[in-house]
Amino acid sequence: MQVPLLDLKLQYAPLRNLIQARIAEVCDSQIFCLGPKVVELETALAEYCGSPFVFGTSSGTDAQLVILMAAGVGPGDAVITTPYTFFATAGCIARVGAIPIFADIDPATYNLDPVKVREYLETRCHHDADGALVNEAGLTLKMIIPVHLFGCCAEMNAFRAIGEEYKLHVMEDAAQSIGAEYKFADGTVGRSGSMTESSYFSFYPTKNLGAFGDAGMVTCRDAGLAARIDALRNHGMAPRYYHSLIGGNFRMDAIQAVVLQAKLPYLDEWSVARHDNAARYRSLFTEAGLLEHITLPVEPHAGHDLKHHHIYNQYVIRTQRRDELKAHLQAQRIGCEIYYPLSLHEQECFLWLGNKKGDFPESERAADETLALPIFPELTVAQQEVVVAAVRSFFS
Ligand SMILES: *Cc1c(COP(=O)(O)O)cnc(C)c1O
View (cartoon, rainbow, N blue to C red):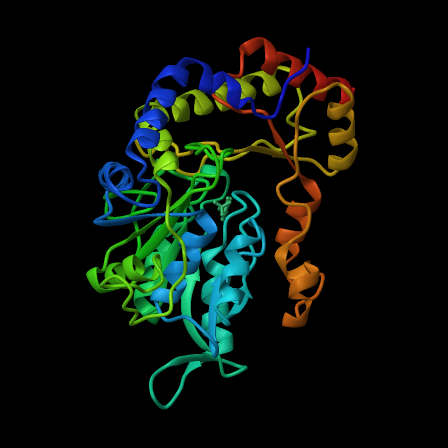
């Protein structure tokens, strides 16, 4: 039996008529860029994630870019993030002229390790005569961008504390984590996209809430920042054809907005189905006696009474024989993928930053050992059994 890594046709089939009718409305309206359908989606998502200001954008990447621009991050600045994430997280930092500073990950969750971030700030940075936080190279520290990788929130309690202590803007990269929840030490529950100063989602088709093309969303808390984002998203234009800021075309289009609005009511049940699939993998892999060979994803926020403590955008296992296992699964037509095979500090385009192999050992080890298995909501028990049997046949 063939098991795809993801089969979007299964999600589309029951929603086909609804979505096609909504797209037809956009066609009839002939209003395609921003407009009332985008505003409707923004309103729904503001409520969904609990964030006061929400802006639809052309992609997740553009959402991150426009936040960095609006926050005034640029040449002479540095932003701390993880080397183990999709490229965009660090790419956008460099695109605005700032320097990405990497800190290593927690090997259990693969998320940016707040201990490593604090260590960097304590040992490699100081406050200059004007009170600015600068590093050894004289760059001004502006932001920290933790990524809620694979759908599991980073340790936001610690990041919030570091942000407050060092007066750094914390931006959540929530591209893979829409709907994920987190419980703070004071008992309050945060939702991905609303826990810090700013955040962004991606609606790339393979994300848990996927568009029919590229789309993304900015969320933020501060009205001033929100006003700049709103303007920058549309060439800094306000009023029409008058430009006080240099922005870009980061507009969401109405067809993506209606597709996302049609899917949004189902998002929570899809997340629950993904989580149920993860629970089933755990029992199947345990019964198969495979836990000495592979490491399953951890659920650090389980047991906190949260329904969506992990939304499993990806189900990622690890093994030292990863490349062989991947080849074995692919030969049996089981979809699997490596997220991500090379840490960002080792990417060719970032070598000039001066990092080298060995600088972020946990990230490098994860890049060598992780493998994503099918976890999509419509995955059947029989398909999961096939996946587990194939993993077992590899190790036996
Ligand atoms: C998908 C993704 C992005 C970029 O989003 P796009 O919509 O593809 O531009 C950024 N960061 C992470 C972690 C992602 O997974």
